[in-house]
Image 1 (cartoon, rainbow, N blue to C red):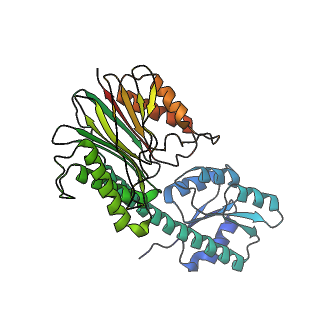
Image 2 (cartoon, rainbow, N blue to C red):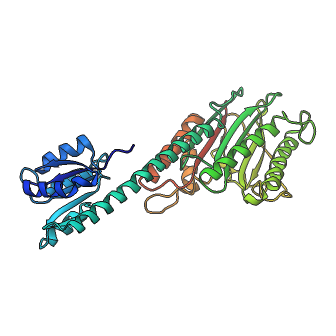
Amino acid sequence: MNNPPRILIVDDEPLNIDYLEQELEDKGFELLSATNGQEALDTIRASLPDLVLLDIMMPVMDGFAALEQVKADAVTRNIPIIIISANNDLKSVVRGIQRGAEDYLPKPFEPVILNARISASLDRKRLRDQEQIYLQSLENELNIARDIQTQFLPPEMPELPGWQLAPYFKAAKFVAGDYYDAFTLPGGELIFVVGDVCGKGVGAALFMTLFRSLIRATASASLPLEGDASNLSPAARLHRVVSVTNRYVAETHEQALVFSTLVIGLIDGPTGAVTYINAGNEAPCILRKNGAIEELRPTGPVIGFNPSAVFKTRETRLEPGESLLVFTDGIPDAKDPQNEFFGIARVRDILNEKPESPAQLAARIGAELDAFIGEADQFDDITILALRRMG
């Protein structure tokens, strides 16, 4: 059985407390009382009443001071407070409402008004409590979803002799539509992936897991999709991965109208050859030994939208000491409190500083983004994958 609503009556006049207690004693409430603001604060913090009837003019601490402290405390701020004020003291009523009071009760007390305002305040409190329970349940579910989604991202980067890899990932919400992956093939090559599913929230997160799983399964040739992939060239293998993933999502989930940008690359460690497809993503940047920055422009459209889309493969090569930076549009599109974009120029400036390792490069960009965004909202996921050929 639910506990009866607990009401705290705060007034320095015993007759007023007695009157209110008599009016309310048959309503099924649990009644508490206090005679000044400090006593009221102590009682509120100890018992967390469902409603407070608070007189304004009191000794020790007046009602305004007590009201401000209650509303400043995260634990007590949602407790509704009805201020008690004389009919001719409208300024005090306005001041109390401005400081967070729920309603006001004029003196002398009118029983019908008294009961109506108490009932209305308790009903609003009950709805707020139910809303908080629902929101807490939703937050718990989202935390579970975030933990599950995190398991779809690699816990650590694979080792490729002569190479270093480092990711940076920061979701804009509880769950993300961005994804990244890196894994080695039986022949020793390494495949890296960075993608961004359209949209935000749970829907994007669900499709993120689909895209990532399809890409890894098809790339590793663990499933008999379109024949054996063990003897495919790097370009043919990547084309197979992207085409199969694109066609499956576009045909199977046609009604969802979902798509993903994608950069996928295959690295031959000893030679430094990098075969890649850029499906509508931000152009990855290569920092050459001479200081030049080369962009790997898109070679095809986004995946998952058009089952007949055509994707071209390209090849480049990283010499010892050269770096490759892959990222989603959450980096250049990030905004500061003045609504200015972070942009590509800042990314290039950080690259030109030649951080000592991919981990330092990714962390530096992440730190610069945090400082740039400041108090503004991070409205998009941020994903970075930095690679360097050692030498």
